[in-house]
Length: 322
Image 1 (spheres, one colour):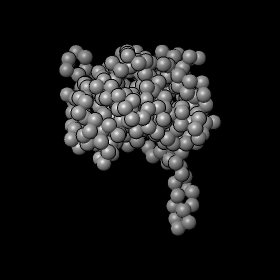
Image 2: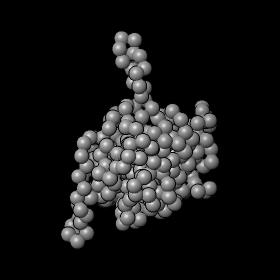
Image 3: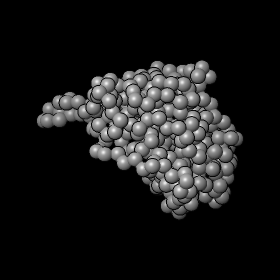
């Protein structure tokens, strides 16, 4: 997509493993291992996978909070790897992060007004009365009253704290927000409110979301496209409706079969995965999923499948290509 806001190509992040008295380098954790995708302005791309598959690391790489081992990240046509200092700081105003834990993401010693307005002050966008006005507008937009400005985070519920985190993100008027499991720590009744708020903000401001989650139902509701990650790689990438109606990769099928369905006629045949996720320090040769796949062929043990198909549906599988 030539008009993509975010372009990621062959992105990799390997964390070195050191052992022994002299901390010798004995290997690396392949947290993200060759990920590529595009994200258009105003689009939501859901990133789904088991714990430890590299979802959060991917989000932090996109924001340059972690330095990649290899690959390319372009934001609005600019290669982020070539930015530093003031140029990187200005670009970061347009890329914000919503954290998973609303309890740990807010400084308990700072008042809400200071927390939400900190970015405006750091980037020199507003001071004094102008800063207060913009912060109050952001708080009102996320459903908090003006008296929240002078209160501390411990005085709010989990859902209200996440609204504070969202206000902190949108006050800088970003073009991209990485939402790292923003509703997983909240009650189910509050999750829908937060997801609806994020969608309303997207409709109003044209914000693009990289929405990281493990709840497939939440991702289906908010995302236009969904990427399934396994052991640091994207194994399937498709439009949301197409993925849920016609999953191709055996791992995707297993994940969807575990989603509860109220309608018995809509329930999928339960697919139980055997064994454990392989270690990212020593991933298996060939397809990373083949040790747990009931359909694996000899080729799967030798060759890593490429992510092939169309922009509407691509899959990395030798047995079930698109």
